[in-house]
Image (cartoon, rainbow, N blue to C red; front, side):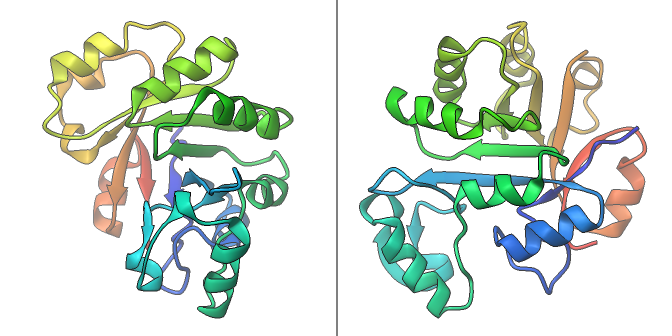
Length: 215
């Protein structure tokens, strides 16, 4: 059975990325979601992809230099309210899988706060392209669900080597690796991103876990 997830809650063109409204609709359709998190200046975790507000809000500000109240004000005004991770957790009711991608490198203090905030939510898996986040999380708490993310040009050899760590539950890879036999033979759970067409979804979803959007 496929455990595919909706990429940033983008159910279809009507639903913008990383908004509570989009997450709710994803859950309504019976899917878990993949989302990204950053920490604000006042150490609040937000569901937001970029390091700055340029792409989404046309503002040359870095997330890490702003308080959540400032981001909230700008985002509400633009009708794209940036949610806190806490809001997403509450909305998920601990029923749907959440793949939480840590975008920046978090300090140990932030990782501790993240573990505390998510401690009652068993459906969370933490993933990152910055693998240090994942290894540091495991040092703080051994039995959490974690994954490593990979993108080209990372070699298949390197991916396989890094999956030797028994504490890693899953890997998240660019769909570029979908057809690789050695990757397919790996015994741990694999997710492939980002599937953007119905054709691709239908082609691969029978045997693979996909991170998809716009279906």
